[in-house]
Amino acid sequence: MEQEVVSTKIQDPLGAADDLVRKLKHDPNTYKAVIFMAAINYDFEELSKAIKEKFPESEVIGTSTAGEIDTTGFKNDSVVLTTMSDSLTRTKGVLIEKGSRYPVAFCDDIESALSECGIRTGDSFSHKDAFGITFINGVYNAEETVLSTFYSIIKNDNFKIAGGTAGYTGSTPKTFVSYNGKTTQDGAVMLFVKTPCKFDLRQEDIFNATGKTVYVTEADTVNRTIYKINGQPAKEVYARQLGVSEAQAENMTFENPFGRHINGAIHIAALAGFGQDKSISTFARIVPNSTLEMMHIGNAEEKCEETCRDITAVIPKPKFVLMMTCITRTMYFERERISDSIIAKYRKAFPTFCGFSCYGEQLGKVHCNQTLVTVAIGE
Image: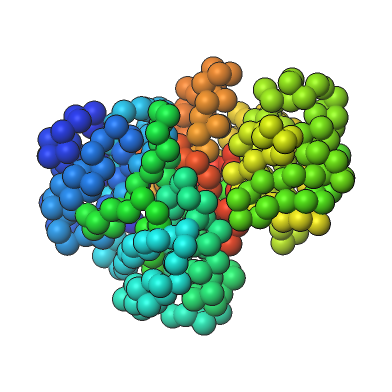
């Protein structure tokens, strides 16, 4: 496996595509797959078309971002593009439109893409040499719907999907994903990879359980809103658990998210805000009659070192590394002035890498927040 990572700040879509290709080592026709991550200020539709025209023989997927990542650091207002090359690896993408409403309408497309990649549905061993990368549009809360649709098709809960929710900056809520030049604002793009190379998909969580639990007594699962906790207004209970006033609690949500118990593990659900009715909006689904852990932030730099060690223990010589990290983490790193330290640890562990700041992360069947999801492929 070979990975190249290039970037540009040229705003014109055609100029940006030209600049990216000019920086690559090989002929554009030689790349198996191409992944690009672009700031929201680009004309994403035109950029997607321009990049696909440069790579007519490749599977090309893209996403809008809330910030980009490469070996130079956390970036903004740029396009980062990475390539995947390996003669024995097969890739195939698929675009899912109307993701928040009718993803089941694209079941045949998903099955066809899996088949073309050599991945059999209903095969309990399909996860041994294959996985998926997905970018899902934000804004429409489509993550859980898209994931549940996919796993109803693959019929193998061990098959790994690693993904990030498309991001944006500014006050206008809009995100984009694309496949082979075609763009959607409500859906997802998936890239399936079948490879003899060893691979590792994992998630980093920098939060620790505090030992305090709360019980969700009233919630709107689809709209991701908690109304009552322990039978009382959600905001009141949240503030009480933190030992602060309700006003103070509004500024403590990043450091103190909720943890959900799913399949024997704790998965983060970030707080999006508070309603006038003292409800709590979250960035992941919370179901009624469930118990939540009160979480608190730990040492991000130590956790980063642990993640790098764990990846290289499985993949001693990483050849391809893709990262999807929550925008709230990126902002926290900047606020704590540890961004450069985090990137330095990645550079020490990986020959090259890239990624983007997203609005949510997916690993397997679970969508969550404030984490890092990584895809590492070896020789």
